[in-house]
Length: 227
Length: 113
Image (cartoon, rainbow over all chains, first blue to last red):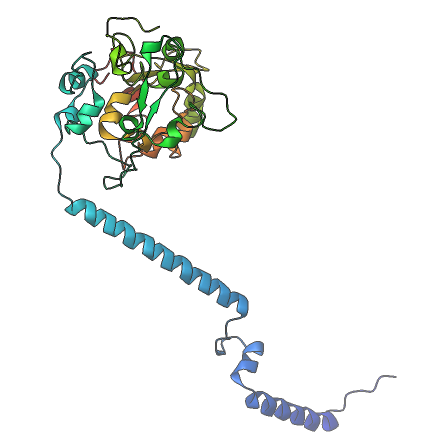
């Protein structure tokens, strides 16, 4: 049988309970109160290790970005303040025929002499993409090539003439192997004409072999056909 | 739509080893995958670049020495590779649909040739 609620006896109990609850909550810190009630401001929690790490990483990223931006700004200022070089006639040439008129010619063959163009400053090709890129070292080292044809056609290859333009890795070892155990390249005029060895450039983007024997074979006249 | 067009063209404009020379100093590329032959293959004015840069600026880090050995696609170019290393609108003119005829031209048909 259910006991009916007796108001007379339960009312004081309820009153006491409410008072007790009120006393307890009013004694609570804001921190605890904020758990139970919305709108009670709590003090910010100290960052956890994870949060701290994330913040530090973010600071580092921002510092890096700042450094990169500063660097870009310096570069832009430098570019702005750099003296403007007047364009050379060869640089303003619109067509190849125009350029080939301007560029110096080899005295014997009449072909364009790119090295003379460098020496005489008819052109000032950059050493890198950026205008102030430093030059790469020029290797001054002549190689007397072994003969593959007739004796008097021997060639002395001048590294110096080539390394003002090119770096070692452009030719070695892909075009001219350097390894001790690699087979020695047998360079013939036919192979050069077919675009191998010297012919990777010569006859394509550098002077061609026809009528230019003496530029590599000092003992030959330019009318002779290289064997 | 634009990206689809770029992708299509990049497939068309894939270059193969094998080149002919328009003039000494120019390199005219040949390509594969071009069945319509509507767009002429690219002609690269090597001489013009040589007047401004030493060979080692581009070779061999960007382009292998042997002409045609490095495959070039428009897609890669737009991502800053091959010609796109400089032709990005900052260092040199931007490769886009306004500049196609700068490279894709019939030999002798363009004053820049």
